[in-house]
Length: 255
Image 1 (cartoon, rainbow, N blue to C red):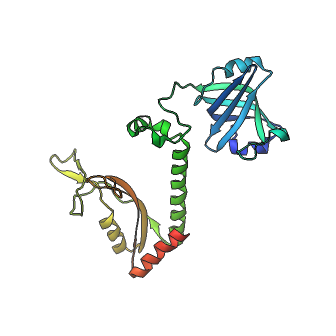
Image 2: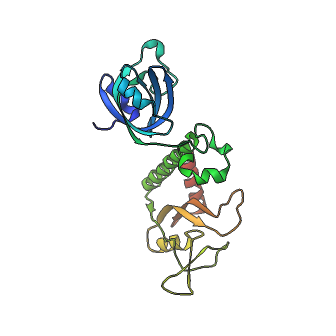
């Protein structure tokens, strides 16, 4: 059966569908089991009752198990509707469970703010940290912002160009990270502190309006506003005045 995303389940009330995702919460009450399932689009509640063979499988499920769930999408009785949650007016009556992957006891809880967890532990288990609501939200917001800027500048006749990461060392404001050359022993590439020279070449080459989300590396101590590796919105314009550049950036931020 073709997979259905959780945020579109409401379109399939009365039908049997299959969802894929993770067990968010598992609750057992005698001969019944309740679950919250999660995929990239949201959450939905599922319930097992009246099917002993399915309940037997359900008893093995724990948080973060990866599963394929088949069931009938039902509208909840009016008195059980929760208007404050996604899909609070529907639930899945589970008819089949396939465990795609199991999990073990997690090294830290991911249902809260993981900023409270030691950073070295979060980075060791980065794939778990990424599951947390805060990290999911932050990365998706970053994607939304970048797409907005990309579409905005494209409409303003900018061209997005990726500039090289490996280049000859040049004098800049900070120390550069260097990468030894395998083919030319004793020589080194430099990682970019900024795309400054490349974007100037683009202006000379007649592109007039360039941008990219540039990865920049500077071999210096971390400060409040500076990381050794960071991403910046980089752009260059030809035949403009300082006020034109300031106005463009103001318009992007306001939009």
